[in-house]
Image: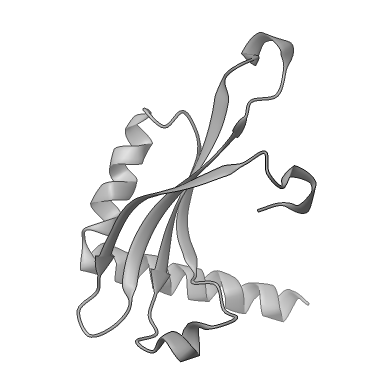
Length: 111
């Protein structure tokens, strides 16, 4: 995923479901070796919820779906359960997408 760590990270799809109307929601985890001597042999996880709203695969080409929620840490943490609950709740996904759009608009204005 990141150029300097290519090959060191391992991405796993944890969850995926189709959305009503079009698109899908997906949870994936990226695992990378933890840094630091005391963490040798451990892994660090980045777990993300992505929401693809485009129905057509042709329209998806070249565009990464929005990441509406992310957690970095131990994959057994309670926050991971919250990500699953969000991914299974259409209203929560709609709120997360609105927040994502607001952040994008603020970033565009700041540039």
